[in-house]
Amino acid sequence: MKRRTQPGFGTLAIHAGQSPDPTTGAIMTPIFQTSTYVQEAPNKTKGYDYSRSGNPTRTALEGNLAALEGGSWGLGFSSGMAAITCVVNLLQQGDHVIAGNDLYGGTFRLLRTVYEKFGIATTFVDLTDLAELEAAFRPNTRLVMLETPTNPLLRCCDLAAIAKLCRRRHVMTLADNTFATPYLQRPLELGCDLVVHSTTKYLGGHSDVVGGILVGSDPELRPRLAHFQNSCGGTPGPMDCFLVLRGTKTLHVRMDRHCQSALAIAKWLSSHRKVARVYYPGLPSHPTHRTAKKQMKHGGGMVSVELKATVAAAKKFCSHLEVFALAESLGGVESLVDHPASMTHASIPKKERQRAGLADGLIRLSVGIEELDDQIADLDQALRRL
Ligand SMILES: *Cc1c(COP(=O)(O)O)cnc(C)c1O
Image 1: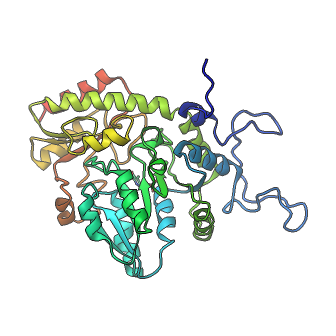
Image 2 (image 1 turned 120 degrees about the vertical axis):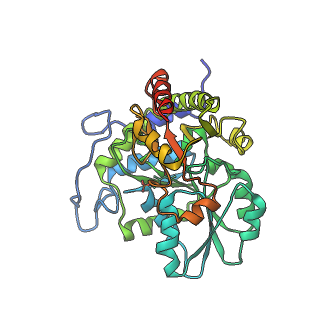
């Protein structure tokens, strides 16, 4: 067998950041359910003094995700939003942010309703259009926040091209890699400065935990961000870190199935007479398919669909599904369906939603890893009732 110098993704997913417990040999990282650590003498510690500042289960998770993203360090948070907040805290009053115009509703809300009043303004642009990005730069622009694929239109923006434009201007890039996961795409390797995840989604993968992570390579950024992590305090508990660590062990296997089934469902929906439009980056019909092909291993596990139906009928369709549970969130082993206009994206004003092309009748599917035949039969019976 050929020896690799660098372990492959699946090997890193299972082992990176973790080693058997030295005192017992336990193969799994213990859940260090402790708030404090006994010191040998004042300020003489074994590396941990208080669990907001550091916890060994969290250290293992941070090391694991840093390896998966190809970064050199990770910082764990109690939610994806806490991780994003930490990055915005690097900015000063008067700084300017450019963000994608169909990004996660919570990120939009954070920038609009929390940071704007502190004098940090954000311009929302279509980041799949590099000219639009270039026109939005101001002398005080410090941060470009992007998601790819976006939520829920699954538009892919060119990570390498955006990173290059930002580097030239010394503007920091933060890529939200929640939808793609590092198995499909690694923004740091394409030149982005920071990667953020809601580990609540594919990394945890089992809909049993809320968490976030930041990963980067720049050694100077780590202490600045760790300062805000410790000062603001949105850190994860050890049990939550353990759950995400358990999730990442099967990330590569789950993602292959998510992607395979999502592609099959996207194709099946595309040929259905009651379907107006399917959004899936893995299909050539998607406007950003070429970018997806360039930077992603597969098309991902999310499919959005516009039905030939009224908004009321689209909502009813969601309720008639059985294998697909009607719920917010995504990325778990079970299939979910979401009506963005009334659920996940309701915090975005209707006018802004329309400007971003987010129709009120749009439905978002998080394709789980149940049997494909059962998933399609479920969609079929709900479409028949329309
Ligand atoms: C869910 C999500 C977030 C927010 O993460 P929480 O863990 O819910 O705080 C941010 N970005 C994307 C793309 C998400 O899907």
